[in-house]
Length: 282
Image (cartoon, rainbow, N blue to C red; front, side, top):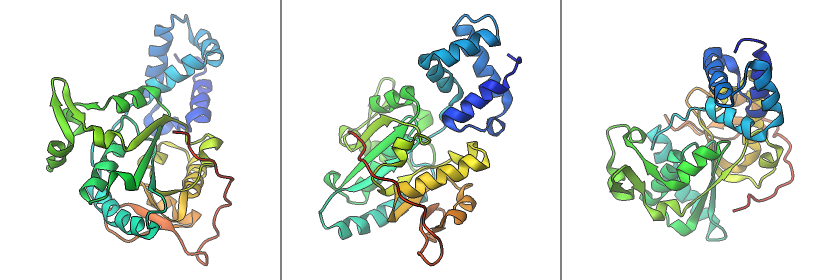
């Protein structure tokens, strides 16, 4: 499919913020061919007309383009830092409400489940926190809710958590019900204004996403993430994304390899305007 592929590239940028050059045109073209063949389309024009008229096909193309690459406890120091600072934050809340945490994109669930496991290991009671996990892919959400994982989801030298929080089954490993109960999975798009208007969270994880966006979209997304993070909260990002945060008034907390950031003091930056808040539905 080479006939005016730019319209498909523009569609993906508008819908999910994807900068095609970040993943390579060949990968996108392969996904387009796969979907056109699956839909029995004769050519690129035929597939384009189907795409713009079918929400189902739009989602199918997005699923074909998104290839989850995630595993449990990716960047371990982030989770050590999470456990330490979450205890401090919970103490300051004094039982008024649970700690609110957001994981997006949550992919197939490895990150939000890692968050819950890290908090359990830090001695945090399940009643003291709740994790909202959001992803644009309903297929990934369904896999996360199912809670079954193969060996590729477990990497690194320390897999002791697998013995504590998983059961061995014929097809792999099943996450414990106590961990599953701490996470609320739901579909959502970071570029959707509805998400940006949610009540800010104590802790936000959004890692290795903005590297796939062009610069204007990166700036837009980081403004949303700043809005979603409370003034006294924490934002965890990917290791290659920190240099983009200084310009919007976020600074590193200074713990090596944690990739954790917080709002800069008011005198150091002018905060982005907050939108009206509305809670995420369970």
